Image 1 (spheres, one colour):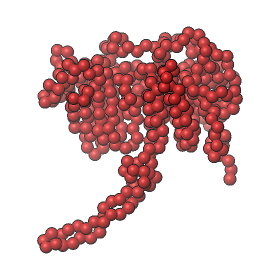
Image 2 (cartoon, rainbow, N blue to C red):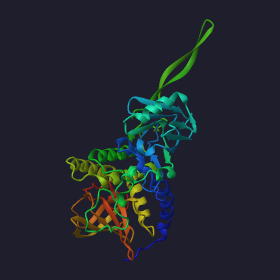
Image 3 (tube, rainbow, N blue to C red):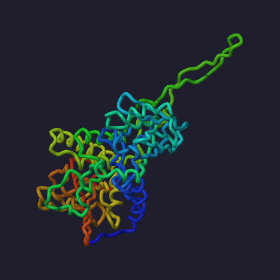
Image 4 (cartoon, one colour):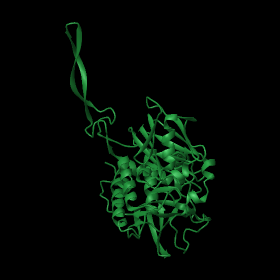
Length: 430
């Protein structure tokens, strides 16, 4: 079967190239995620396997962005932080806290932190050491606390870039990341190891709690309560309506007035940007791919994930269009990039025999003459044909035909109310 590359899809191809460069980060060398600690806070950061940067998945509201770094990995390296935060805090456990003023007026500023150890220990902020913090840095180096925590106060956006030369010098002993060879075929009979190149963006094996957290983070990014009006859509403000003279003093008189919230425009809820949403969806599907399947709590976490996919990815029209249009744009590209997270409405064509106990499906992308092999889905309905939503990581494209392999994601076809017409096809005419 040949891929039919219709002209109406050209704009999607162009858009996909630009979108992926920002949202997925596929071209830089593998370094950044190796410095990150395995903590729940890091689920709010996108760490592509082939990038030297990590990006905060913000919600367009000021908050404290928290990033946990492995101390052993970042010693004697330098990082740059591009953010609109007002203050950067560096913490070691609960006892040690060091703060650096950054900027004002929500301006994006780039700052540098260098973590020097060895014979000349020093913590440099923008190439300068604060002598008042020197003793604290010595305490950090002597501490048995394994992580360093960076808090970016009053941030809406943040990107942390690691020094690739420094991290390359860490050696495999520090990295400790086990991966399968990139050449390993996706349908090999060998049992998969804990980490594969297809899921290279993942830091470690994922716990059920982490999967729940990433599902909840995506749902919250789609719709979360406005902090300004607390979901009411209205705010009470004090407005001056008159003045009164009292002797030599003129006193201003105020009254309370209810007005439409300027932040959410009266909706009471906010939605993250499309770029942030897709990154958050990518984090979720990568966590799904690496969840510990033998953990007693995994089944409940998968049930929660299934509900989120149904309620949010399918049930919200704007989210549905974002995920499926972007997924279609990726899949229509001449070559599929390994490790890319992709979502698409599909038609299940047939079920293949299991390979090493792993389920295999052949599906066709809705509206495109292209087939995909869904391999070893973590969540999959018992479906032999019909419409489904597919999500997962691109493992490889089979040379010589139009089949792309999508591994360890989901393929679901829940009962959908006809109110959600986008599941069934074009919008019905009134």
